[in-house]
Image (cartoon, rainbow over all chains, first blue to last red; front, side):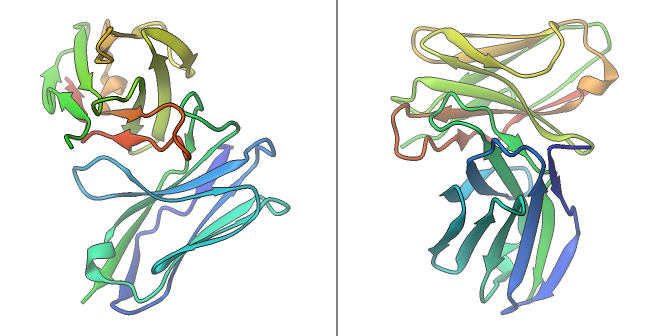
Length: 113
Length: 114
């Protein structure tokens, strides 16, 4: 069993829909949680970064972490065709650039105009 | 501000050969990490370098190695290539001490082993 499980999709939604992306994990030592977006033929780019449990909002994006359930979510409001990409959750046990990120397998999202 | 630059972008090798991939981090970034991305395993951590020292290493065989130069540029090498080494190899740089330690990824080097 992988440390981080993520539904690979693909997920297809109409423009304007609310999108919910989720990951579960088994390592209780994970403290830092991130969501990356990866467009085709590009490297991943950081969308959201949260520490421990709680919510964080940035524009149309909201990240939620529930450490008691070992479950994290990313919500995208008013989804746009430009949001079409693969979304990767990532986690680490320590902060700083020396940390080793453990990634989910990614969810492929398509937002239809 | 230039991003992370990886070369070559695409390459084809045959089994048994060796390959060297190069990464130039964002100016001022002293930490460089390498990840392997495949459809089956996703993104997996290879190793991380800071000031020419390997600080962390993932669970990969010794055929995978790397180094970092004094100008923070990094190279990774894979010897005795196997078919399963076909993947997108991603380099990421980070500014040590940043609030989030955000990793900035390059566009990757896509390796095909025949």
